[in-house]
Length: 305
Image (cartoon, rainbow, N blue to C red; front, side):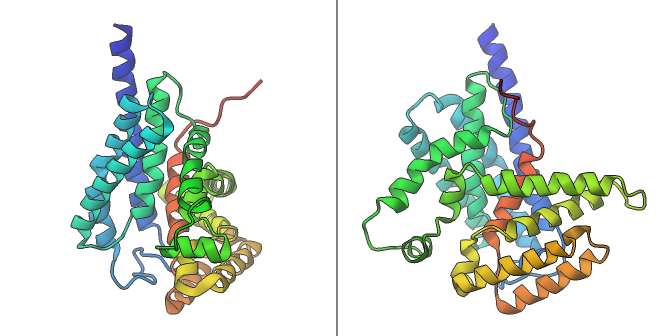
C-alpha cells in the first residue's frame, strides 16, 4: 500500500514538472523583445522559423517531458551509463517528433537535451522518495560529467560537429558543459537576477503585477546570462569575437539598469535590431532562460546543517 501511494504521488509530481517544462518553453518563446531571437516582434536572426514554428514544436514536445520523468522513475536505479543511454533513446524520439512538426527545423534540440536530463533526474529523485528542488541540478551535473568527458575531453577523433570544433579550437563546451556544471549559469546567474528583479519591481506601485512584471524580470535574467555565457550558438554564427561582443553589449545594458531601466523596451529592441542585422542568435542562452523559468517554480535547496 505504501509503495502504491508513493508511486501515485511520484507520478503526480512528475506530471507537474512536465507541465512546468512545457510552460517554460512557451513563456520563453513568447517573451518579447529578445535580442536576436524569435518572439512576437520578429524572427530575430532566424530565417527558417517564427513564433508559430516554436509553438508547433512545443506542442509536439509536450508529451515527451513526462516520458523523461517516467524513465527516471522506472530506470533510475540503473548505472549512470545505462540510465543515460535510456535518456538518449527518449531524446532521439522527442527530436524526431520536433522535426516532424517543424518540417525539419531545429527549434528546441537544446531544450530537449536540458529538460531530458533535468526531468529524468527528477524522476530518479522521486523514485527514492526525495524532494525535487533546485539541487536537482547537482544530480544532473554528476550524471552529465561523463557526457563531457566521453564526448569531448577524451574524444581523439576528428571533430565531426561545429560544437566539437569549437571545443578543439577554443575550449567551449556548450550545452554539455552547462549540464556538467549543474546548470550553474541558469541557477547562479539567471535565477538570481530574475528573483532580484522581481523583488525590485514588486515594490514599484506603478507597475502592473503578473505576467508583465514576470516578463520584465525574465528579460533582466536573459541579459545577465548573456553577459557571462559562452554561447556556442553565437560562436558558430559569428565566431568567438561575436560571442564576446554580445557579452560586452549585455554588460553595458546591465550597467544602465538592464530591464529595470524605465526605457528598457527600447533598449532591448535596439539590442534585438543589432543582433538580427548581424545574423547572431544566442540560442544556447535562450535554452538556459527556459531552464531558469523551470527552476523558478521549484523549492530552494534545503538548508544544510
